[in-house]
Image: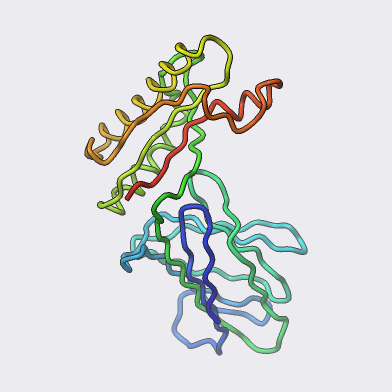
Amino acid sequence: MQIHVMKLIYTLLFSILFVHVLSGQSLQATEKAALLRVEVVDFSGNPIENQVVVFRAEKTKKKVKRKTNAAGKFSILLPKGETYAVMYTVFLEDEDYSTIEIEDGPGMMEGTLEIELETKKNQVFELDVHYATNRAEINVNSYKLLDELVYLMKSNPEMVIEVAGHTDEDGSAAHNLGLSQDRSHAVKAYLVKKGIAANRVKSVGYGESRPVASNNSAEGKAQNRRTEVRILK
């Protein structure tokens, strides 16, 4: 069975087939748990290291996370008789992908899961970057998130992005425009410092001109203060 699903900036190709377990494996299936071997690659077939995949059991709600090794692989034992939501972690958030069902059948079983991560032109996603109040200085707690973007771009050397800054409508329009521009420039500067060529990152600021929520509430204003990334190439 093979499923094709578009999620956020990724296309994931997923196939799973349970068969009888072969001998000689370091991690073995049991009568109660199936062995799942997972491989994650990019659109060129290159292994993706340190990619987190999450399995959430529908009945117990328990989550199990695993991270790929240098070969883009890991193995995991999943209890039988359960349906699992399969998710992948991107920019520190778990993104829903699909579900798999492991029947509570007799014998020992194993399966294979292949995930292909592929970036798509014009995909837009939000980076939860935090800045100093009313300034363009990036908070240290946002570095890990930006490092994930660095990794993504290094894994896709032809990728070109636009970093767009947005604000709420507090203050003057001119001030907000300048602040949004300064913040997007700060993100670009961070990426360049980490080894991304400057010509691969376009930084722009839109100020308060492109709200995604009402500015009449604190919640709406928080949504409007955002940094977005668009894949241009």
